Length: 586
Image (cartoon, rainbow, N blue to C red; front, side, top):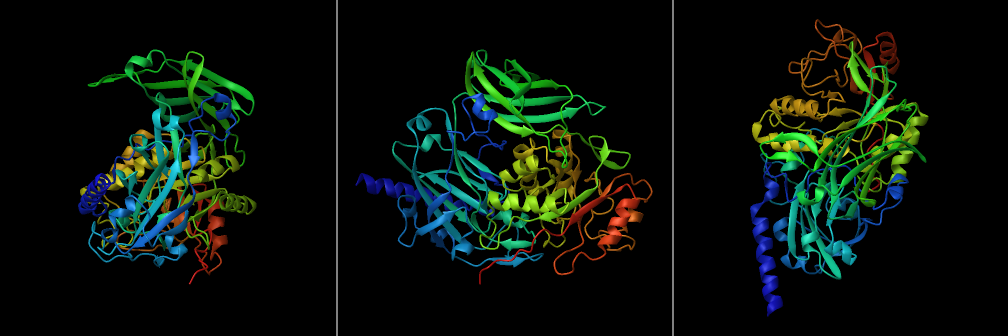
């Protein structure tokens, strides 16, 4: 009887959650999702962090999960929260369910794959029900905070643990983390993930690509100690001579105020086995406002003499280790590869370390002909090596943030990256219908702010992009100014505002001709030679897309490159695109 009552209560809660239809509301970008942060591993000693050894406190949940498919969320049996449904079968995670025999992949460029009015999506909304049973060490259950992190789920999902609802997230291309600590139990634990193919977020994801669904990136468990680092921002800065440097570290600590006085934060900068610089101090920030002081924050400047500079040609990386300590004890350490480089625009030129860049770039989707949108580290390394062998030096993440490992590889191998927000509304009429609607500002802004908060520590990222083909509107203006305030160390680009847009530091048209103007009424495109000569125009020009390579073998390529060499402010471009999005499936 008690078990029946428990099931009835869980079923009632399940149906109440579905009745809210959170996925139909663009203002609900998440429920209970943790703030975005850089990739953490939560080492418990600095040596392991420095050497980037596998962390005992970060565990991958990839593998075989149980999966069942339904035509809509409302067709899912609530008993799934307790046990797998009769039609469930084993499926790999990560994967796209369309590549595993369920539902149909859809390829479309401009036209949306759904025919409803934003933010609504169809009631018949294919839904994947994933479940996994796992156990954790007792210390993970009783000490600190145990997070579950989904690197990518398309397009929105609800999460349950041991029958209790945990939270909700949309935005298919950025990590979503939740605190599992209150829900874990001794022995086996069961998580259930309900993934909706369509959500309000779908209206912001109208990219030219296959439309697929599922848990298509890795899933992780991360155990953070009770006292832990909850955010770390690393900003390398060079002096005016591009010779000496400092590492600006802004961090925040999760700890009761009463314990903060016993803690210190330590910053170490390593060049392989050589300690380059270090500093240790109490947490504490001079910031004071109506809340009072911020004792859990710290801003530290670490001087570095004559570091080896980072560029695509010389990707010199240092290992920055940030530790939270109590006396001689290391409570937690986090670490990242960083590079000292300075990105700026001066006299109409995009400069890296004081020298003009010539972008030999390419647009790249995350795609594999057998796995759909699931890419492995081997796939990524192969792409990078092919790019380097063929003299590419830059890649545009078209048109969304990539899997976190991609940036780490670009740091080490040496590629300049344009990191692009997961925003495209190409099929809207007019195209800026959503970007100029204040009701959509929270959804737009979350995608840009979380991209910055997740990826800002990577030296390979030299430019932020507000998205792709979404027209121009007030939401872009708000996002542009937010990025400039929160990261003045990088320029921001966006093509969609047209010739006179003030929301881009770089003129970044797509398919502008070398000589000939294209007098499109809404967004005229001048010949690129003429464009940089317009009265009052002082920005560099880098084509975000050009030389469309799908079947025409880079037409007029020599003309473009002659112009790039003849006109210093024409600083290259990104070929469309790296690889055909073919799939070996009928």
